Image (cartoon, rainbow, N blue to C red; front, top):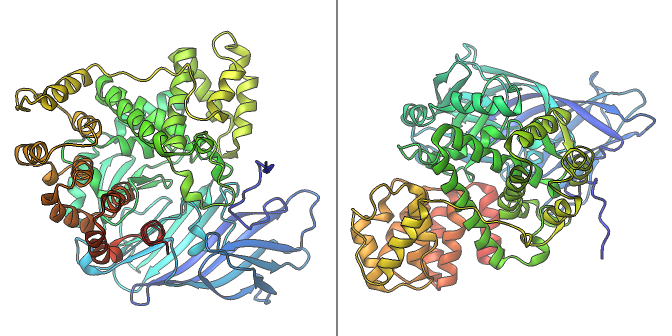
Length: 594
């Protein structure tokens, strides 16, 4: 069996053990016509104590490097390493003695997976739009840098665009548009490089609270501000347990529909999908999730992608706590049950060695680390700790843990050692080291695992059972059902249903026309699986309108499994260009082995 170095980041070429980049100064021009960023980055670095390294190694992928010099304009020798499809190329810069900064002039290319350029027809405003997605290893496609979570950096930036628009970044954003069209940004707190972010387009700003605002295309801004008006209550609840919010502002950018994720926790400016705007706040737990990352993920972060569960598990757990405090215990229970359902579904098809909390993908695509084990199994582990310790003692442990590792990137083993020295010392009568290790390194769920419960889901199970036995689903039976009840119903139906049953659901509840993308997607999966052809037109419209990977990937896979090959190819041909480049790469590989 291969012995991995658990402290080494296998997804970066950077020589961070010798030299650490501490600050980036960006000077960029956005060219919408050429679809590229053009400019320079100054990288300030320090040598680790006792190290006399004369080479700085950076990560790049699909970047065009034009020149590299010191700050006096003296050219430096440099070279690019062998290309890797996933990791890109190492950029090696020869360093004269005493040098502590280099200046790299470069421009991005059309193959930059971290940038998506949208034409006017792909946006609500009808104007071009740019946005980035750096996580996990795409920052290197728009900035040459040490692209590893271990290498926290501060940054400043000057950005101008080839046409009038607003530019925003993962930093404090100006409320007013600059008169000269040059946007300036400062991030003075060290942050992981996968949280570097930029967007530009026709973007309005609507204040939501004293320290929060919504940025969005004009047609979406007011709707989003109403949907997310509870953000201050969420922030205050989180601060009461996790400590003061460290990033000054929590603004939110609502992106066009091609954004491939539910949200991205970029500091000071969370990126969010428009599919969260359901009109009834039923999907705002994703906003709570990105907010919780401000502590678990942005403040305390993973050292490598193997350790992703430290971000996502604690954040998913604390999301549930925020939802409970702001929207009630029943809502939190419902969401925890759906979380458990997602985990069970993925457990059924995932090889056992992959069902641990650490994502052991050292020589594979780090995107595969984003699975239900690093999110939901890890969350169940944190819920287990809370249940064993009691909420009061667990909250004290959680706050101390965040204070201890604020602005630090840690490994799974760092967490285990910390738990051994704290939690197991003071609560050894409630939880053992063996239980801790079984949860973290064991496959599947521990034998002692107690599944979550929700009182109101009993009504759903009862209604489902009666319907499957031939009784109609009447509005009276469904009175009081929330979005999560419908999700549970659809996700727990038998694999096989009759065409008559599907027709009844379709005609009575019009689930495919739901304004809630979660419900529509779950219904489409049920219908495709059972070859209910009337939904195919709605599925095509949905996949051509929405680019969130959570919906897109499973729907295309359902079409593939069900044998709808010609329909799949036709829909994908129409929709592909509207998807984020990183999602296109994944889908090309999954669906067409490219």
